Image (tube, rainbow, N blue to C red; front, side, top):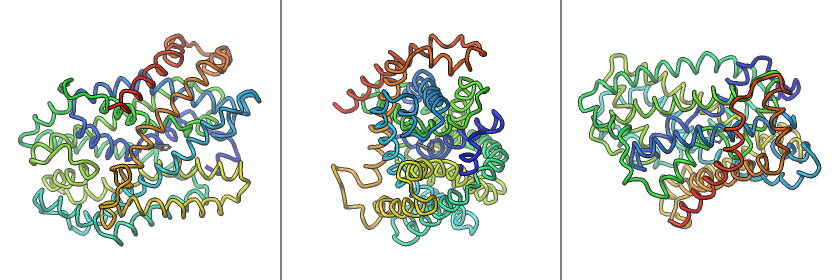
Length: 450
Ligand code: TRP
């Protein structure tokens, strides 16, 4: 990111797509999506989720790209760079920084678990176990004190090291190869899962929409999940937008990222739910779901141990490309607005994250009795960010670009000064101005009142 910052820009359109997709694709797709869908009742949630991704998420993603590419600035500085009159909107960027800080805190807990699952699968601690024993391994590990804290710390150090060294270009080079491998492994997992006995119950859970299960709360969490998974609603992609080349097509970039992100989430669902039912587990078990289900699928495969190691390694890397961007949002702000040194900023922010993050990690163990407003620290941060802060941030972004910023300039940025055709523009602008803000307000109110 440092390199990019100095050079200000991706060199290819594929570079832009991979970086944005790297931020979007992560634990949100493979860990958070299946467990949220499982808790919210399945197929109906999926439909609402897909609707939100393409009708609201894609226009918001494009809006962040527009703001970023036009201003060439970080999330907070972007607004006042667009014009002194927009200075007041900088609070949207500040909200994003706070959200990134909170998300990174609980995200690093799960990233730490993933790292440990690389170890657990390689030393055979999960092999040949019954589904109950596999679940036991998870709860013994996560309810401990030092092991999960250590894993989290290792992950934080890895991310910080990459951010201070500014080896984003190296990361990009590897993710371009590694992410397709992750995709291939996911396909393999889906195949195995679908051929398990009793798999069809999982498929109908995932794809049969039972709208009676849909509540205001589940619609709100589908919205939160869509925003979380696409990394939008908090200005993260403003920074990436500022790196996209002037001649690239922002609509195409957004469409590719949203499609890839959705594909990975769907594959995760297809890999997990048939197995949930085949092994007689509960789809609503929460954040533990992926870690309790997938080891069983690997156990039922030839060379399963090897595949498990590779899978959890790739999942850790997918998480890493997301945490890099989460940390970068906060660090870039500290560097540009508070004039901190990059290394010092990275160190201080990482330490603060570890402070809050360790509370998240321990909320599965020693601190499990500690609740704020009825939630453990982990659940609280997860809900606060995805369900409230990101939709509110998204609402502010749509109000800014749809109502405050001149339409002609939005069109100019999306068409690269009229060079590109933009047949989608009317639909896009309609969503930005009316559909997205209205839906965001309604869903927020419905979800809060419930
Ligand atoms: N989208 C990421 C994932 O699915 C998580 C995430 C949420 C994120 N908000 C972000 C990543 C902002 C980077 C920036 O795992």
